[in-house]
Length: 100
Image 1 (spheres, helix red, strand yellow):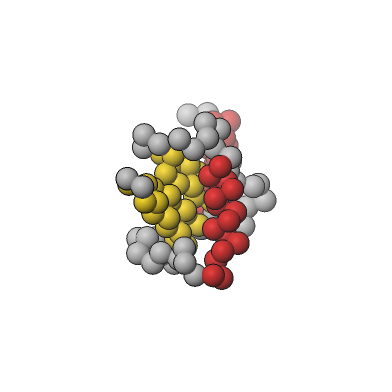
Image 2 (cartoon, rainbow, N blue to C red; image 1 turned 90 degrees about the vertical axis):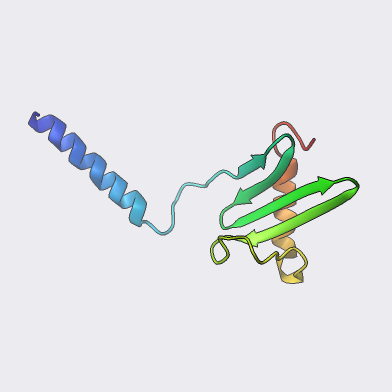
C-alpha cells in the first residue's frame, strides 16, 4: 500500500471521527417520513409524530426520542408540546406524495 493511499485513509478516519464526536452539526437535516401502504409519520430531530387510522378513528402519537427511544410516553395531549405537534403535522403534509 502506497503512502498516498495511507494518507487518504487517515484523512477519512479523521473526518469520520469528527462526524461521530460533533454535538451540533452546521448542516440542516431533512425529516424522515414513515409509510407502510399510506403515510404514517415523520421524524424531525428528536421528535417523532405518528398518525394512523383504523376505521373512522385517528390515533395521533408524539414522542421525544432523545429521552423516550422506546416510544412509551405519548406526549400528544400535553399542551406544552402543541407547537412541536403543529410543526410536525405541517411537515407531514409536505410529504411529496401527500397524505393518502
